[in-house]
Length: 364
Image (cartoon, rainbow, N blue to C red; front, side):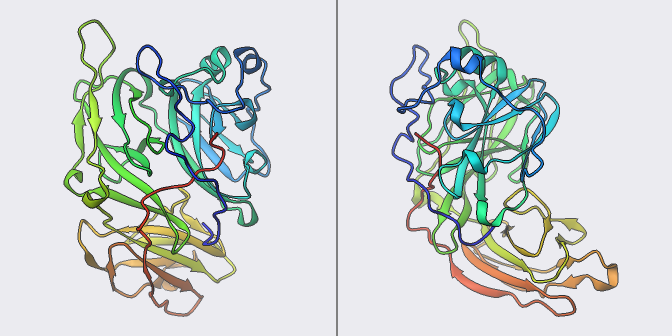
């Protein structure tokens, strides 16, 4: 992710998602000047094959074909489709209203979109995820749509903040289930039934003006997640609701941000021990240029981290070790990778967290 990016529109209080409630309390997702009628959606020309110049890869692990949108649900925001249990490489830049920024990628089952168009509810969105992009410095981005989504059981999740709320399951750094837009409430997330339930972990994402990137924070008293069992709708069955304690005073970021700048002429991997770390774009390789990583400080204000190294794929003798360093939560750091040189960890100062909010492109 490049460090210079955001010329984006501000997300307003209801994120242009809300005008009125339907009979079951769900909320329409496209209420701006532009809408797509069911007839227009039914005849939409949706591309399903790879774009040769695509930098965004979407892996659909569900058993349904999905239509993908960059922002709100209208024909002009369609990125294309991805077939069931398949992957798709997408060139998304021509759908964006700004040359760089962050958008919420939304996925809807093809049959649902073609029958409803923009006249659908947030319940119809089976997946959403943040994507950071910069058309002037295109980087590979990968998004995984979880296989447990789209089932007949559901839980309701609320987001009362101006941040994006990413939901992870199984563990705090587990697979992403979906993402709620700022101030998105009464969101029904449909999943496969599970008699043992699931553990839901919140990750709030906001925009850090100091380094012009996305930062993650967790609710301090909910770090171990909330267990809940999704239910299949039926008479007399209560809807399970998950409310996360999301007041800014109760939020704590147990992460340090590490910007790795690769100044060699070959791709590299950031390793923790022998495991490759994933950057904010969902990829592992660092091409010449910069990528951003979040270091988990295990709920500590500061933590000494060793065992980080960079692999240039030149053999074990050429792995570059990153010196042990004390990282502080909420702070930014940079290392520059040069072949044959020991990298230095350079502190860049604290993240700007005066405004816990995020800006999104293509929201109307």
